Length: 110
Image 1 (tube, rainbow, N blue to C red):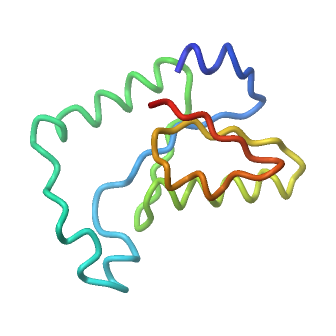
Image 2 (image 1 turned 135 degrees about the vertical axis):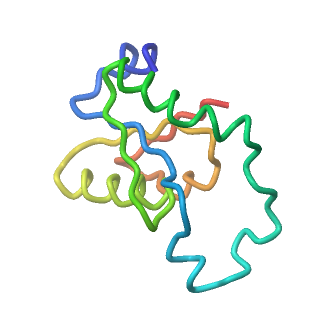
């Protein structure tokens, strides 16, 4: 995150995480991610400390109940582009490649 901040030098930045709990997709399609194994307790215990470290590094943290982080990132990207901003999304999630266009760049962290 420190390197990203120094390399990109963004006017606005946010670190987006999935909120805990179901999303609107669970209501639409009960089998959504039904085959996915639950998060291991060892990983779950790291989530809040990670949020705190991100905040200590000076990044705002965003979680939106009822939607996944991808949905929030997509919405923020569209709003930012509509307001004339260039957007850089840094993620290892290949699904977000669908956001890429002349105004939205993807930095693959993996």
